[in-house]
Length: 342
Image (cartoon, rainbow, N blue to C red):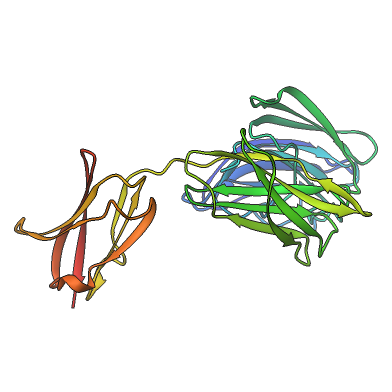
């Protein structure tokens, strides 16, 4: 039978017996070619047909959203037609590994989050492997290569899923001006927690309170970060009147870089707005030239705050036409083209 006819590339195929005479398979691909790589799985019955409940062309193993690619899957049977799938993800948190438990009918096993469980909170995890434990669970092994933790690690996962009070980091999307954090508390809808942050040189600081949604998700955006700084985050919560803390997660906020986006939107209808990014408050100059090379506008913009800026040219009387936008700072010049329409 043809297992997968979807458009895109497939790689990393792994197969194991399903414990009931069939076969479990996993692989990664991207559909279409511009989409992120994702992990897929399938179960084939002894007669060669696709098991009921499993999606044609493969079941997506995790529903993690946001930028990132998933690679290197491995699979183990739970002995009853279901599967434990492990994989490596590349995203803003580094190279985290995840495990997911799928039932014999292709659904996420009860008690397991839809995106899987992160194996460890460190940022550098590689080569995940899984083998059934003979009791419906799986032993997962992986390699860690972070500065704080190096070596080979193992963990046993059971059919019942994660401990209900366990807080797991799902994603940490990091930009120069914001860290977007997403946790999951299994079976803890409505959990109230406090977000804490520290650096290598400061103690833990309470940032804000957050509450889990009805499905156990907690989110927080930290917009008080400094470009180039390294931060650790954790959640604190009360359990039976006792203060508990989740695992800490370190992220590095990228340094700001000089950038020129140009007109937003482009073409601009009427008065244009120019978008650009400044790394600091050093002198910077914004200029506009027409197609004949004549300077139409010049403004000093270095006094604006570091970060992404948008400057309206509504008071400059810009006529419709094609323009070259130029941003200069400390001996470096960036250019972009823009169009102004009536």
